[in-house]
Image 1: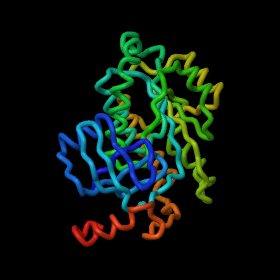
Image 2 (image 1 turned 180 degrees about the vertical axis):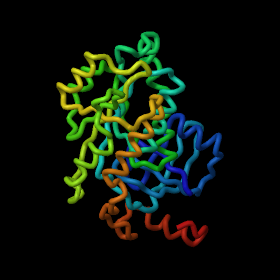
Image 3 (image 1 turned 90 degrees about the horizontal axis):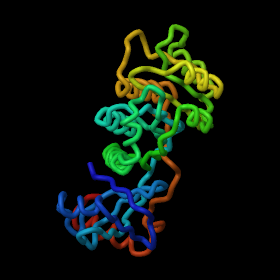
Length: 278
């Protein structure tokens, strides 16, 4: 399986990979001229051939535009800040499971020291999201927002379905809440879903009230008490299953040789003769 990398843009039948990703490709993976990789700019994916490999940049010639699968579900994960090793594991898996936006929450029961240090971890967290998105061959990298209080995050949301994971007796099973919304997806309409997951100490009474004021329903994942990172995996996997993320169709596109950018058709034909990769 070919590796996928993210580039800023495609232009004139070419693309340039820069920064740490380029260094990794050139020095760690020891890329050579003429090798094929997949590139995404967040809107399209192209098969591309390496041309010029530098220390901190790799230049590609575009060969063939690849079909992409467009999801019908947009997930915003509101995740309380917990110990960084567990938080980072959680956002890595959230990326693999389709989270589109991640909002770190400075919940009332989050450790104050972790909240204070979270801004300095943003660069590392974004790197984790990029690497996880590449590994899972996503079209784009999830958006990492600045840390916010639960009230701020609840107020800023614009999802049709908003769930707050809860251990309280009155919380409805997440399955029930998702199933009640699923019939509206018979026509494959695009849906926005927000899932809020609290810290180890749970939500405070004030946070429950704020969530309810902004349309968040309390949802339970079962009788067992899950750790934050486990709840992330369970909730996102349930959402993907319930809303049919597999009911997708390839985006309509023309990837015939005549549709390729300048010079790419000849490169594709030459590559097919030389390596048979296509």
